Image (tube, rainbow, N blue to C red; front, side):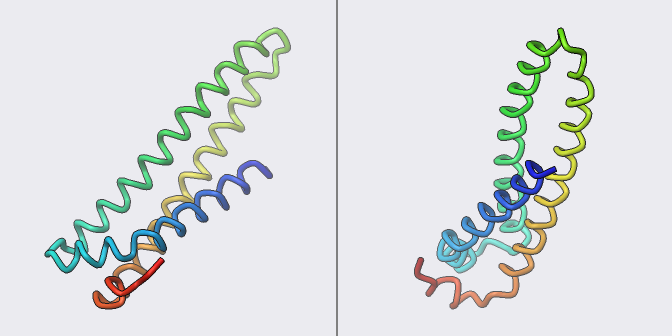
Length: 117
């Protein structure tokens, strides 16, 4: 379970770091006329892309481990834990995105443009 906790903390840190780095860009996009809904979709798809790619890489690694551990018979038990941990990480990633989107939508346009990171 510590791996899941580390994954959740890592995802939240990455999403928040992206939030801090891209504030000015979002301000410029909003000044150019992008709607909040379009910005929300853009942000959500970006985070979803990161999560999906990382999970595909981890799945390849786990399948490799399962193939090498097939002789021991414990592979399916670990695979069930892996699937559960993926669901938990997805849930917290979605929660982190929703919280940050609410933060983005509350920030003034001029504040976003003036942000210096």
